[in-house]
Image (cartoon, rainbow, N blue to C red; front, side, top):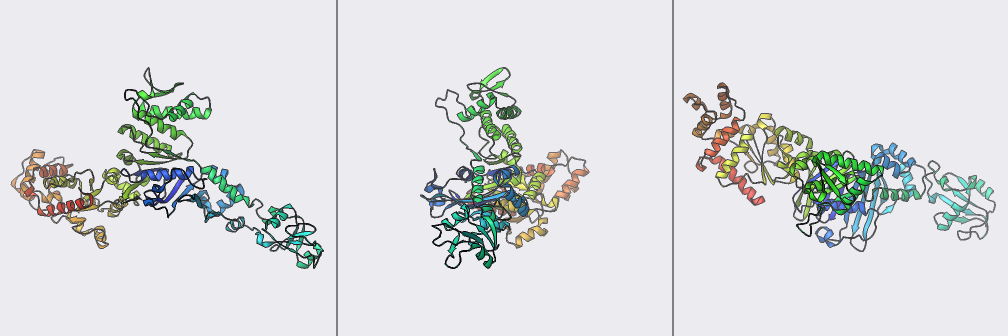
Length: 638
Protein backbone atom coordinates (compact mmCIF):
# COMPACT_ATOMS: atom_id res chain seq x y z
CA UNK A 1 0.00 0.00 0.00
CA UNK A 2 1.17 3.51 -0.74
CA UNK A 3 -0.37 6.98 -0.67
CA UNK A 4 -0.64 8.64 -4.08
CA UNK A 5 -2.49 11.84 -3.15
CA UNK A 6 -3.65 13.79 -0.10
CA UNK A 7 -6.14 16.64 0.21
CA UNK A 8 -6.65 18.29 3.62
CA UNK A 9 -9.01 21.12 4.51
CA UNK A 10 -9.31 23.13 7.72
CA UNK A 11 -6.90 21.13 9.91
CA UNK A 12 -4.77 23.47 12.01
CA UNK A 13 -2.71 25.52 9.50
CA UNK A 14 -3.74 23.28 6.58
CA UNK A 15 -6.62 25.36 5.26
CA UNK A 16 -6.61 23.79 1.79
CA UNK A 17 -3.64 21.62 0.87
CA UNK A 18 -3.47 19.24 -2.10
CA UNK A 19 -0.62 16.85 -2.86
CA UNK A 20 -0.78 14.82 -6.06
CA UNK A 21 1.59 12.27 -7.54
CA UNK A 22 3.40 11.33 -4.33
CA UNK A 23 6.42 9.07 -4.86
CA UNK A 24 7.75 6.32 -2.60
CA UNK A 25 10.19 8.80 -1.04
CA UNK A 26 8.74 12.23 -0.25
CA UNK A 27 10.73 15.11 1.25
CA UNK A 28 8.90 18.06 2.85
CA UNK A 29 11.22 20.99 3.54
CA UNK A 30 10.43 24.26 5.20
CA UNK A 31 11.14 26.45 8.21
CA UNK A 32 9.96 25.77 11.76
CA UNK A 33 6.22 26.14 12.40
CA UNK A 34 5.42 26.07 8.67
CA UNK A 35 2.97 23.15 9.05
CA UNK A 36 5.07 20.11 8.08
CA UNK A 37 4.23 18.23 11.28
CA UNK A 38 0.52 19.05 10.92
CA UNK A 39 0.46 17.14 7.64
CA UNK A 40 2.08 14.00 9.07
CA UNK A 41 -0.11 14.28 12.16
CA UNK A 42 -3.41 14.33 10.26
CA UNK A 43 -2.28 11.40 8.10
CA UNK A 44 -1.46 9.42 11.22
CA UNK A 45 -4.83 10.31 12.72
CA UNK A 46 -6.60 9.38 9.47
CA UNK A 47 -5.10 5.89 9.27
CA UNK A 48 -5.21 5.20 13.01
CA UNK A 49 -8.86 6.24 13.36
CA UNK A 50 -10.06 5.08 9.92
CA UNK A 51 -12.88 2.96 11.38
CA UNK A 52 -13.77 5.40 14.16
CA UNK A 53 -17.03 7.33 14.22
CA UNK A 54 -17.83 10.03 16.71
CA UNK A 55 -15.62 12.22 18.86
CA UNK A 56 -11.89 11.52 18.82
CA UNK A 57 -9.24 12.23 21.43
CA UNK A 58 -6.96 15.22 21.10
CA UNK A 59 -9.34 17.27 18.95
CA UNK A 60 -10.24 20.72 20.22
CA UNK A 61 -10.95 24.22 18.88
CA UNK A 62 -7.27 24.66 17.94
CA UNK A 63 -7.50 21.65 15.61
CA UNK A 64 -9.58 23.73 13.19
CA UNK A 65 -8.03 26.31 10.90
CA UNK A 66 -8.38 29.71 12.56
CA UNK A 67 -10.52 28.04 15.24
CA UNK A 68 -13.54 27.96 12.91
CA UNK A 69 -15.44 24.77 13.80
CA UNK A 70 -18.38 25.57 11.53
CA UNK A 71 -16.48 24.12 8.57
CA UNK A 72 -15.61 20.42 8.98
CA UNK A 73 -12.05 19.18 8.81
CA UNK A 74 -11.81 17.14 5.62
CA UNK A 75 -9.17 14.55 4.76
CA UNK A 76 -9.20 12.83 1.38
CA UNK A 77 -6.50 10.22 0.81
CA UNK A 78 -5.97 8.18 -2.34
CA UNK A 79 -4.05 4.96 -1.83
CA UNK A 80 -2.85 2.23 -4.11
CA UNK A 81 -2.93 -1.44 -3.11
CA UNK A 82 -0.56 -4.02 -4.50
CA UNK A 83 -1.89 -7.23 -6.08
CA UNK A 84 -1.65 -9.25 -2.87
CA UNK A 85 -3.57 -6.65 -0.89
CA UNK A 86 -6.30 -6.49 -3.55
CA UNK A 87 -6.74 -10.25 -3.37
CA UNK A 88 -7.06 -10.05 0.42
CA UNK A 89 -9.61 -7.24 0.41
CA UNK A 90 -11.87 -7.72 -2.60
CA UNK A 91 -13.97 -10.77 -3.65
CA UNK A 92 -12.25 -12.48 -6.55
CA UNK A 93 -15.28 -12.31 -8.89
CA UNK A 94 -15.65 -8.60 -8.24
CA UNK A 95 -11.91 -8.01 -8.58
CA UNK A 96 -11.84 -9.70 -12.00
CA UNK A 97 -14.63 -7.43 -13.26
CA UNK A 98 -12.85 -4.30 -11.93
CA UNK A 99 -9.57 -5.30 -13.62
CA UNK A 100 -11.34 -5.75 -16.93
CA UNK A 101 -13.34 -2.54 -16.60
CA UNK A 102 -10.70 -0.15 -15.19
CA UNK A 103 -7.28 -1.61 -16.00
CA UNK A 104 -4.53 -0.65 -13.54
CA UNK A 105 -6.88 1.77 -11.82
CA UNK A 106 -8.49 -1.20 -10.06
CA UNK A 107 -5.77 -0.87 -7.37
CA UNK A 108 -6.77 2.73 -6.54
CA UNK A 109 -8.91 3.62 -3.56
CA UNK A 110 -9.99 7.13 -2.51
CA UNK A 111 -11.36 7.72 1.00
CA UNK A 112 -12.78 11.01 2.23
CA UNK A 113 -13.51 11.54 5.94
CA UNK A 114 -14.69 14.57 7.88
CA UNK A 115 -14.28 15.64 11.48
CA UNK A 116 -17.34 17.64 12.43
CA UNK A 117 -17.32 19.79 15.58
CA UNK A 118 -18.23 17.92 18.78
CA UNK A 119 -20.30 16.02 19.62
CA UNK A 120 -20.38 14.58 16.07
CA UNK A 121 -16.67 13.89 15.31
CA UNK A 122 -15.51 11.53 12.57
CA UNK A 123 -17.78 10.69 9.62
CA UNK A 124 -16.94 8.82 6.42
CA UNK A 125 -18.08 11.02 3.55
CA UNK A 126 -17.12 8.74 0.66
CA UNK A 127 -15.12 5.71 -0.40
CA UNK A 128 -14.39 5.27 -4.06
CA UNK A 129 -12.79 2.19 -5.65
CA UNK A 130 -11.43 3.18 -9.07
CA UNK A 131 -14.52 4.97 -10.45
CA UNK A 132 -17.02 2.97 -8.41
CA UNK A 133 -18.42 4.63 -5.24
CA UNK A 134 -18.83 2.26 -2.30
CA UNK A 135 -19.92 5.05 0.04
CA UNK A 136 -21.32 8.36 -1.19
CA UNK A 137 -22.96 11.12 0.81
CA UNK A 138 -22.05 9.18 3.98
CA UNK A 139 -24.11 6.11 2.95
CA UNK A 140 -23.10 2.80 1.34
CA UNK A 141 -24.54 2.41 -2.12
CA UNK A 142 -27.18 -0.25 -2.73
CA UNK A 143 -26.30 -3.57 -4.27
CA UNK A 144 -28.53 -2.90 -7.28
CA UNK A 145 -26.70 0.40 -7.94
CA UNK A 146 -23.38 -1.45 -7.78
CA UNK A 147 -24.72 -3.97 -10.29
CA UNK A 148 -25.72 -1.15 -12.67
CA UNK A 149 -22.31 0.57 -12.34
CA UNK A 150 -20.57 -2.72 -13.11
CA UNK A 151 -22.89 -3.45 -16.01
CA UNK A 152 -24.36 -6.50 -14.25
CA UNK A 153 -28.04 -7.55 -14.28
CA UNK A 154 -29.53 -7.29 -10.80
CA UNK A 155 -33.20 -7.53 -9.92
CA UNK A 156 -34.21 -4.63 -7.64
CA UNK A 157 -36.89 -5.19 -5.00
CA UNK A 158 -39.16 -2.77 -6.87
CA UNK A 159 -39.32 -5.35 -9.67
CA UNK A 160 -40.63 -8.05 -7.31
CA UNK A 161 -44.18 -8.66 -6.07
CA UNK A 162 -45.66 -11.28 -3.74
CA UNK A 163 -49.11 -12.71 -4.55
CA UNK A 164 -51.29 -14.44 -1.90
CA UNK A 165 -54.12 -16.80 -2.93
CA UNK A 166 -55.46 -17.66 0.56
CA UNK A 167 -58.12 -15.45 2.18
CA UNK A 168 -56.70 -13.37 5.03
CA UNK A 169 -53.06 -13.89 4.00
CA UNK A 170 -50.87 -10.78 4.24
CA UNK A 171 -47.39 -9.62 5.13
CA UNK A 172 -48.29 -10.15 8.79
CA UNK A 173 -49.99 -13.48 8.16
CA UNK A 174 -47.99 -15.34 5.57
CA UNK A 175 -49.91 -18.53 4.88
CA UNK A 176 -51.41 -20.66 2.15
CA UNK A 177 -50.53 -20.76 -1.54
CA UNK A 178 -48.40 -17.86 -2.66
CA UNK A 179 -46.06 -16.87 -5.45
CA UNK A 180 -43.37 -14.25 -5.81
CA UNK A 181 -43.17 -12.61 -9.25
CA UNK A 182 -40.14 -11.16 -10.97
CA UNK A 183 -41.84 -8.85 -13.44
CA UNK A 184 -38.93 -8.07 -15.78
CA UNK A 185 -38.14 -11.79 -16.23
CA UNK A 186 -41.78 -12.88 -16.33
CA UNK A 187 -40.94 -15.64 -13.84
CA UNK A 188 -42.93 -16.80 -10.81
CA UNK A 189 -41.21 -18.55 -7.88
CA UNK A 190 -42.60 -20.29 -4.85
CA UNK A 191 -42.32 -18.26 -1.70
CA UNK A 192 -39.88 -19.66 0.84
CA UNK A 193 -38.09 -18.26 3.89
CA UNK A 194 -36.10 -15.68 1.88
CA UNK A 195 -39.13 -14.27 0.03
CA UNK A 196 -41.24 -14.39 3.19
CA UNK A 197 -38.66 -12.23 4.98
CA UNK A 198 -38.58 -9.70 2.12
CA UNK A 199 -42.36 -9.31 2.41
CA UNK A 200 -42.34 -9.07 6.22
CA UNK A 201 -39.64 -6.37 6.14
CA UNK A 202 -41.58 -4.33 3.60
CA UNK A 203 -38.82 -4.50 0.98
CA UNK A 204 -41.18 -6.32 -1.42
CA UNK A 205 -44.80 -5.26 -2.00
CA UNK A 206 -47.65 -7.80 -1.87
CA UNK A 207 -51.24 -8.28 -3.01
CA UNK A 208 -53.97 -10.76 -2.09
CA UNK A 209 -56.06 -11.94 -5.09
CA UNK A 210 -58.15 -14.57 -3.25
CA UNK A 211 -61.33 -12.60 -3.95
CA UNK A 212 -60.73 -13.07 -7.69
CA UNK A 213 -58.73 -16.29 -8.07
CA UNK A 214 -57.29 -18.98 -5.79
CA UNK A 215 -55.60 -21.18 -8.42
CA UNK A 216 -51.99 -20.05 -8.58
CA UNK A 217 -51.22 -22.09 -11.71
CA UNK A 218 -54.10 -20.52 -13.61
CA UNK A 219 -53.10 -17.06 -12.37
CA UNK A 220 -49.51 -17.49 -13.61
CA UNK A 221 -50.67 -18.78 -16.97
CA UNK A 222 -53.15 -15.94 -17.51
CA UNK A 223 -50.53 -13.32 -16.58
CA UNK A 224 -47.88 -14.90 -18.85
CA UNK A 225 -45.47 -15.99 -16.09
CA UNK A 226 -43.29 -19.09 -16.26
CA UNK A 227 -43.44 -20.91 -12.94
CA UNK A 228 -40.14 -21.97 -11.42
CA UNK A 229 -41.18 -24.69 -9.01
CA UNK A 230 -38.69 -23.84 -6.27
CA UNK A 231 -38.46 -21.14 -3.59
CA UNK A 232 -36.97 -17.80 -4.57
CA UNK A 233 -33.34 -17.43 -3.38
CA UNK A 234 -31.05 -14.45 -3.16
CA UNK A 235 -29.03 -15.80 -6.09
CA UNK A 236 -32.13 -15.63 -8.33
CA UNK A 237 -32.05 -11.82 -8.06
CA UNK A 238 -28.74 -11.78 -9.90
CA UNK A 239 -28.76 -14.46 -12.54
CA UNK A 240 -25.34 -13.38 -13.91
CA UNK A 241 -23.49 -12.91 -10.59
CA UNK A 242 -24.78 -15.05 -7.78
CA UNK A 243 -22.04 -13.68 -5.49
CA UNK A 244 -23.49 -10.14 -5.73
CA UNK A 245 -25.36 -10.19 -2.42
CA UNK A 246 -26.57 -7.21 -0.35
CA UNK A 247 -23.96 -7.75 2.38
CA UNK A 248 -21.12 -7.71 -0.18
CA UNK A 249 -20.73 -3.91 0.01
CA UNK A 250 -20.64 -3.70 3.80
CA UNK A 251 -18.27 -6.67 3.98
CA UNK A 252 -15.94 -5.11 1.40
CA UNK A 253 -15.92 -1.74 3.19
CA UNK A 254 -15.14 -3.51 6.46
CA UNK A 255 -12.19 -5.35 4.90
CA UNK A 256 -10.87 -2.11 3.35
CA UNK A 257 -10.89 -0.30 6.69
CA UNK A 258 -9.34 -3.28 8.45
CA UNK A 259 -6.57 -3.51 5.85
CA UNK A 260 -5.47 0.14 6.05
CA UNK A 261 -6.08 0.77 9.76
CA UNK A 262 -2.88 1.66 11.59
CA UNK A 263 -0.66 1.19 8.55
CA UNK A 264 0.84 4.67 8.74
CA UNK A 265 3.62 4.82 11.33
CA UNK A 266 4.60 8.27 12.61
CA UNK A 267 8.06 8.73 14.11
CA UNK A 268 8.04 12.00 16.03
CA UNK A 269 10.93 14.44 16.22
CA UNK A 270 11.09 13.94 20.01
CA UNK A 271 12.36 10.38 20.24
CA UNK A 272 14.14 10.50 23.57
CA UNK A 273 13.87 11.85 27.08
CA UNK A 274 16.24 14.14 28.88
CA UNK A 275 18.09 12.40 31.74
CA UNK A 276 17.11 13.45 35.23
CA UNK A 277 20.75 13.46 36.28
CA UNK A 278 23.18 15.03 33.77
CA UNK A 279 25.96 12.85 35.19
CA UNK A 280 24.02 9.67 34.47
CA UNK A 281 24.14 8.57 30.84
CA UNK A 282 20.61 7.71 29.74
CA UNK A 283 19.88 6.32 26.28
CA UNK A 284 18.45 8.54 23.57
CA UNK A 285 16.37 5.63 22.30
CA UNK A 286 13.00 5.11 23.93
CA UNK A 287 12.54 2.06 26.12
CA UNK A 288 10.05 0.44 23.74
CA UNK A 289 12.56 0.52 20.87
CA UNK A 290 15.29 -0.89 23.10
CA UNK A 291 13.02 -3.67 24.29
CA UNK A 292 11.87 -4.45 20.73
CA UNK A 293 15.42 -4.63 19.38
CA UNK A 294 16.66 -6.66 22.34
CA UNK A 295 13.81 -9.15 21.98
CA UNK A 296 14.45 -9.34 18.24
CA UNK A 297 18.15 -10.09 18.75
CA UNK A 298 17.46 -12.88 21.25
CA UNK A 299 14.41 -14.36 19.51
CA UNK A 300 14.12 -17.86 18.07
CA UNK A 301 11.38 -16.67 15.72
CA UNK A 302 12.63 -16.84 12.13
CA UNK A 303 11.05 -13.57 10.95
CA UNK A 304 12.45 -11.67 13.91
CA UNK A 305 15.86 -13.21 13.27
CA UNK A 306 15.73 -11.99 9.66
CA UNK A 307 14.85 -8.46 10.77
CA UNK A 308 17.60 -8.47 13.38
CA UNK A 309 20.07 -9.60 10.74
CA UNK A 310 19.04 -6.66 8.52
CA UNK A 311 19.43 -4.18 11.37
CA UNK A 312 22.86 -5.55 12.34
CA UNK A 313 24.03 -5.42 8.73
CA UNK A 314 22.83 -1.85 8.12
CA UNK A 315 24.22 -0.62 11.45
CA UNK A 316 27.61 -2.13 10.64
CA UNK A 317 27.54 -0.71 7.10
CA UNK A 318 26.70 2.77 8.33
CA UNK A 319 28.89 2.97 11.45
CA UNK A 320 31.57 0.31 11.09
CA UNK A 321 30.59 -1.20 14.47
CA UNK A 322 28.78 -4.39 15.41
CA UNK A 323 25.55 -4.56 17.39
CA UNK A 324 24.81 -7.27 19.95
CA UNK A 325 21.83 -7.95 22.24
CA UNK A 326 22.21 -8.49 25.98
CA UNK A 327 19.38 -9.86 28.15
CA UNK A 328 19.18 -6.46 29.88
CA UNK A 329 20.27 -3.95 27.25
CA UNK A 330 21.68 -3.36 23.77
CA UNK A 331 25.42 -3.03 23.29
CA UNK A 332 27.75 -1.84 20.55
CA UNK A 333 30.97 -3.77 19.94
CA UNK A 334 34.06 -1.66 19.29
CA UNK A 335 37.01 -4.00 18.91
CA UNK A 336 36.99 -6.08 22.10
CA UNK A 337 34.98 -3.48 24.01
CA UNK A 338 31.26 -4.12 24.56
CA UNK A 339 29.53 -0.83 25.42
CA UNK A 340 25.87 -0.39 26.45
CA UNK A 341 24.10 1.70 23.84
CA UNK A 342 23.65 4.70 26.16
CA UNK A 343 27.44 5.13 26.20
CA UNK A 344 27.51 5.59 22.44
CA UNK A 345 26.86 8.86 20.63
CA UNK A 346 23.39 10.20 19.99
CA UNK A 347 23.80 9.64 16.24
CA UNK A 348 24.23 5.88 16.60
CA UNK A 349 21.26 5.68 18.95
CA UNK A 350 19.18 7.75 16.54
CA UNK A 351 20.18 5.35 13.77
CA UNK A 352 18.98 2.35 15.80
CA UNK A 353 15.57 3.96 16.30
CA UNK A 354 15.22 4.55 12.57
CA UNK A 355 16.41 1.04 11.69
CA UNK A 356 13.79 -0.48 13.97
CA UNK A 357 10.93 1.28 12.18
CA UNK A 358 12.33 0.65 8.71
CA UNK A 359 12.30 -3.12 9.30
CA UNK A 360 8.72 -3.20 10.60
CA UNK A 361 5.85 -4.11 8.30
CA UNK A 362 4.18 -0.70 8.14
CA UNK A 363 3.89 0.16 4.42
CA UNK A 364 3.98 3.94 5.02
CA UNK A 365 6.27 5.73 7.48
CA UNK A 366 6.30 9.43 8.35
CA UNK A 367 9.54 10.63 9.93
CA UNK A 368 10.01 14.03 11.52
CA UNK A 369 13.51 15.49 11.24
CA UNK A 370 15.54 12.28 10.80
CA UNK A 371 18.72 14.40 10.80
CA UNK A 372 18.50 14.79 14.59
CA UNK A 373 21.80 13.85 16.30
CA UNK A 374 23.37 12.84 12.95
CA UNK A 375 26.65 14.37 11.82
CA UNK A 376 26.72 15.26 8.09
CA UNK A 377 28.50 12.10 6.93
CA UNK A 378 26.13 9.80 8.80
CA UNK A 379 23.14 11.88 7.64
CA UNK A 380 24.15 11.29 4.01
CA UNK A 381 24.43 7.55 4.66
CA UNK A 382 21.06 7.47 6.39
CA UNK A 383 19.45 9.25 3.46
CA UNK A 384 20.76 6.54 1.11
CA UNK A 385 19.31 4.01 3.54
CA UNK A 386 15.93 5.72 3.13
CA UNK A 387 16.26 5.58 -0.66
CA UNK A 388 16.97 1.87 -0.48
CA UNK A 389 14.11 1.23 1.98
CA UNK A 390 11.68 3.23 -0.20
CA UNK A 391 11.81 0.44 -2.79
CA UNK A 392 9.75 -1.65 -0.38
CA UNK A 393 7.76 0.97 1.55
CA UNK A 394 6.74 4.60 1.30
CA UNK A 395 8.67 7.10 3.41
CA UNK A 396 7.52 10.69 4.07
CA UNK A 397 10.16 12.92 5.67
CA UNK A 398 10.01 16.43 7.12
CA UNK A 399 13.40 18.09 7.37
CA UNK A 400 15.42 21.28 7.68
CA UNK A 401 18.57 19.52 6.50
CA UNK A 402 20.31 20.80 3.38
CA UNK A 403 22.04 17.41 3.24
CA UNK A 404 18.77 15.53 2.79
CA UNK A 405 17.53 18.04 0.24
CA UNK A 406 20.76 18.03 -1.77
CA UNK A 407 20.83 14.21 -1.80
CA UNK A 408 17.22 13.87 -2.93
CA UNK A 409 15.72 14.02 -6.41
CA UNK A 410 13.94 17.28 -7.21
CA UNK A 411 10.72 15.49 -8.13
CA UNK A 412 10.44 14.03 -4.61
CA UNK A 413 10.80 17.42 -2.90
CA UNK A 414 7.87 19.54 -1.69
CA UNK A 415 8.25 23.08 -0.38
CA UNK A 416 6.33 23.97 2.79
CA UNK A 417 5.80 27.64 3.64
CA UNK A 418 3.51 29.69 5.83
CA UNK A 419 1.55 32.58 4.34
CA UNK A 420 -0.15 34.36 7.21
CA UNK A 421 -2.00 31.64 9.14
CA UNK A 422 -2.07 29.23 6.19
CA UNK A 423 0.36 26.47 5.21
CA UNK A 424 1.17 26.35 1.50
CA UNK A 425 2.76 23.19 0.08
CA UNK A 426 4.04 23.32 -3.48
CA UNK A 427 6.04 21.17 -5.83
CA UNK A 428 8.26 22.41 -8.62
CA UNK A 429 6.54 21.55 -11.91
CA UNK A 430 9.50 21.49 -14.28
CA UNK A 431 11.28 18.89 -12.16
CA UNK A 432 12.99 17.08 -15.01
CA UNK A 433 14.47 20.24 -16.54
CA UNK A 434 15.36 21.66 -13.13
CA UNK A 435 17.16 18.47 -12.14
CA UNK A 436 19.22 18.58 -15.34
CA UNK A 437 20.05 22.26 -14.84
CA UNK A 438 21.12 21.72 -11.23
CA UNK A 439 23.44 18.91 -12.27
CA UNK A 440 24.90 20.76 -15.24
CA UNK A 441 25.41 24.02 -13.35
CA UNK A 442 26.60 22.43 -10.11
CA UNK A 443 23.86 24.19 -8.14
CA UNK A 444 22.64 22.51 -4.96
CA UNK A 445 18.86 22.15 -4.49
CA UNK A 446 19.23 23.77 -1.06
CA UNK A 447 20.56 26.92 -2.78
CA UNK A 448 17.05 27.30 -4.16
CA UNK A 449 14.77 25.64 -1.63
CA UNK A 450 16.30 27.22 1.48
CA UNK A 451 16.59 30.71 0.02
CA UNK A 452 14.22 33.59 0.61
CA UNK A 453 15.34 35.47 -2.49
CA UNK A 454 17.34 34.50 -5.59
CA UNK A 455 19.41 36.65 -7.93
CA UNK A 456 20.03 34.93 -11.27
CA UNK A 457 23.16 36.16 -13.03
CA UNK A 458 25.01 35.41 -16.24
CA UNK A 459 28.03 33.48 -14.97
CA UNK A 460 30.35 32.65 -12.10
CA UNK A 461 32.27 35.95 -12.23
CA UNK A 462 28.97 37.84 -11.78
CA UNK A 463 28.22 35.68 -8.75
CA UNK A 464 31.58 36.59 -7.19
CA UNK A 465 31.90 40.25 -8.20
CA UNK A 466 28.40 41.63 -7.53
CA UNK A 467 28.39 40.83 -3.76
CA UNK A 468 31.83 42.48 -3.42
CA UNK A 469 30.59 45.68 -5.06
CA UNK A 470 27.37 45.50 -3.04
CA UNK A 471 29.35 45.22 0.19
CA UNK A 472 31.23 48.40 -0.67
CA UNK A 473 27.80 50.04 -0.97
CA UNK A 474 26.66 48.70 2.41
CA UNK A 475 24.47 46.02 0.83
CA UNK A 476 24.72 42.43 2.06
CA UNK A 477 24.17 40.04 -0.86
CA UNK A 478 26.00 37.32 1.06
CA UNK A 479 23.08 37.10 3.47
CA UNK A 480 22.18 33.41 4.11
CA UNK A 481 18.63 34.13 2.92
CA UNK A 482 19.86 35.26 -0.52
CA UNK A 483 21.23 32.95 -3.23
CA UNK A 484 23.04 34.11 -6.36
CA UNK A 485 22.81 31.50 -9.11
CA UNK A 486 24.67 31.63 -12.45
CA UNK A 487 22.52 30.55 -15.41
CA UNK A 488 25.23 30.51 -18.14
CA UNK A 489 22.44 31.57 -20.49
CA UNK A 490 24.72 33.29 -23.01
CA UNK A 491 27.11 30.34 -23.18
CA UNK A 492 24.32 27.76 -23.35
CA UNK A 493 22.22 29.71 -25.85
CA UNK A 494 19.17 29.39 -23.58
CA UNK A 495 18.37 30.79 -20.13
CA UNK A 496 15.64 28.24 -19.21
CA UNK A 497 13.71 31.03 -17.54
CA UNK A 498 10.53 28.94 -17.42
CA UNK A 499 12.29 26.41 -15.19
CA UNK A 500 13.87 28.96 -12.86
CA UNK A 501 10.72 31.07 -12.57
CA UNK A 502 8.58 27.99 -11.94
CA UNK A 503 10.93 26.93 -9.12
CA UNK A 504 10.71 30.40 -7.54
CA UNK A 505 6.92 30.41 -7.81
CA UNK A 506 6.76 26.96 -6.20
CA UNK A 507 8.62 28.18 -3.13
CA UNK A 508 7.01 31.63 -3.38
CA UNK A 509 10.16 33.75 -3.18
CA UNK A 510 11.18 36.98 -4.96
CA UNK A 511 13.72 36.69 -7.78
CA UNK A 512 15.85 39.09 -9.81
CA UNK A 513 17.79 38.63 -13.03
CA UNK A 514 20.95 40.49 -14.07
CA UNK A 515 22.08 39.51 -17.56
CA UNK A 516 24.57 40.65 -20.18
CA UNK A 517 23.63 43.01 -23.01
CA UNK A 518 23.21 40.11 -25.46
CA UNK A 519 20.16 38.97 -23.47
CA UNK A 520 18.40 42.02 -24.92
CA UNK A 521 17.57 40.01 -28.04
CA UNK A 522 16.73 36.74 -26.30
CA UNK A 523 13.29 35.51 -27.40
CA UNK A 524 12.59 33.81 -24.06
CA UNK A 525 13.27 37.02 -22.11
CA UNK A 526 11.15 39.06 -24.52
CA UNK A 527 8.27 36.60 -24.08
CA UNK A 528 8.39 36.85 -20.27
CA UNK A 529 8.51 40.64 -20.51
CA UNK A 530 5.52 40.66 -22.82
CA UNK A 531 3.57 38.46 -20.37
CA UNK A 532 4.42 40.80 -17.51
CA UNK A 533 6.34 38.14 -15.57
CA UNK A 534 9.60 40.05 -15.98
CA UNK A 535 9.66 43.83 -15.71
CA UNK A 536 12.67 45.87 -16.81
CA UNK A 537 14.44 47.60 -13.93
CA UNK A 538 12.17 45.88 -11.42
CA UNK A 539 13.16 42.21 -11.47
CA UNK A 540 15.03 42.18 -14.80
CA UNK A 541 18.24 44.15 -15.37
CA UNK A 542 20.21 44.10 -18.64
CA UNK A 543 23.78 45.42 -18.50
CA UNK A 544 23.95 48.21 -21.09
CA UNK A 545 27.70 48.01 -21.79
CA UNK A 546 27.92 44.29 -22.36
CA UNK A 547 29.26 41.86 -19.73
CA UNK A 548 30.46 42.39 -16.16
CA UNK A 549 34.09 42.73 -17.37
CA UNK A 550 33.14 45.89 -19.27
CA UNK A 551 32.50 47.66 -15.95
CA UNK A 552 35.99 47.15 -14.51
CA UNK A 553 38.10 50.33 -14.24
CA UNK A 554 40.69 50.12 -17.00
CA UNK A 555 43.78 50.59 -14.80
CA UNK A 556 42.48 48.10 -12.19
CA UNK A 557 41.85 45.54 -14.92
CA UNK A 558 45.39 45.83 -16.32
CA UNK A 559 46.91 45.57 -12.82
CA UNK A 560 44.81 42.48 -12.06
CA UNK A 561 45.83 40.66 -15.26
CA UNK A 562 49.52 41.45 -14.82
CA UNK A 563 49.50 40.50 -11.11
CA UNK A 564 47.45 37.33 -11.49
CA UNK A 565 49.52 35.88 -14.32
CA UNK A 566 52.85 37.57 -13.58
CA UNK A 567 53.11 39.12 -17.05
CA UNK A 568 53.66 42.62 -18.51
CA UNK A 569 51.25 43.83 -21.18
CA UNK A 570 52.45 46.04 -24.03
CA UNK A 571 50.77 49.40 -24.65
CA UNK A 572 49.02 47.95 -27.71
CA UNK A 573 47.73 44.98 -25.69
CA UNK A 574 46.47 47.32 -23.02
CA UNK A 575 44.72 49.60 -25.51
CA UNK A 576 43.00 46.59 -27.03
CA UNK A 577 41.31 46.00 -23.67
CA UNK A 578 40.05 49.57 -23.26
CA UNK A 579 36.93 49.15 -25.44
CA UNK A 580 33.88 46.92 -24.61
CA UNK A 581 33.61 43.22 -25.45
CA UNK A 582 36.57 42.75 -23.11
CA UNK A 583 35.77 39.16 -22.15
CA UNK A 584 36.51 37.79 -25.60
CA UNK A 585 39.62 39.98 -25.96
CA UNK A 586 41.10 38.93 -22.60
CA UNK A 587 40.60 35.27 -23.40
CA UNK A 588 42.27 35.72 -26.81
CA UNK A 589 45.17 37.55 -25.14
CA UNK A 590 45.77 34.83 -22.57
CA UNK A 591 45.61 32.12 -25.23
CA UNK A 592 48.20 33.97 -27.33
CA UNK A 593 50.59 33.89 -24.36
CA UNK A 594 49.97 30.16 -23.78
CA UNK A 595 48.55 30.91 -20.35
CA UNK A 596 46.10 28.52 -18.69
CA UNK A 597 43.06 30.76 -18.93
CA UNK A 598 40.60 28.48 -17.12
CA UNK A 599 38.61 30.37 -14.45
CA UNK A 600 40.22 33.63 -15.55
CA UNK A 601 36.93 35.52 -15.23
CA UNK A 602 36.61 34.67 -11.55
CA UNK A 603 40.28 35.20 -10.74
CA UNK A 604 40.50 38.57 -12.51
CA UNK A 605 37.02 39.69 -11.42
CA UNK A 606 37.72 39.02 -7.75
CA UNK A 607 41.04 40.93 -7.86
CA UNK A 608 39.47 43.91 -9.61
CA UNK A 609 36.35 44.11 -7.44
CA UNK A 610 38.29 43.87 -4.17
CA UNK A 611 40.69 46.62 -5.25
CA UNK A 612 37.93 49.06 -6.26
CA UNK A 613 36.70 51.98 -4.20
CA UNK A 614 33.03 52.92 -3.85
CA UNK A 615 33.42 55.85 -6.28
CA UNK A 616 34.79 53.52 -8.96
CA UNK A 617 31.60 51.46 -9.16
CA UNK A 618 29.62 52.52 -12.22
CA UNK A 619 26.39 54.42 -11.56
CA UNK A 620 24.36 51.91 -13.61
CA UNK A 621 25.46 49.10 -11.28
CA UNK A 622 24.78 51.16 -8.18
CA UNK A 623 21.23 51.78 -9.36
CA UNK A 624 20.69 48.05 -9.99
CA UNK A 625 22.05 46.99 -6.60
CA UNK A 626 20.15 49.73 -4.75
CA UNK A 627 16.94 48.72 -6.52
CA UNK A 628 17.41 45.11 -5.41
CA UNK A 629 18.27 46.18 -1.86
CA UNK A 630 15.13 48.28 -1.49
CA UNK A 631 12.95 45.38 -2.65
CA UNK A 632 14.69 42.89 -0.33
CA UNK A 633 14.23 45.27 2.60
CA UNK A 634 10.57 45.69 1.77
CA UNK A 635 9.91 41.97 1.28
CA UNK A 636 12.30 40.30 3.71
CA UNK A 637 13.56 43.08 5.95
CA UNK A 638 17.18 42.31 5.04
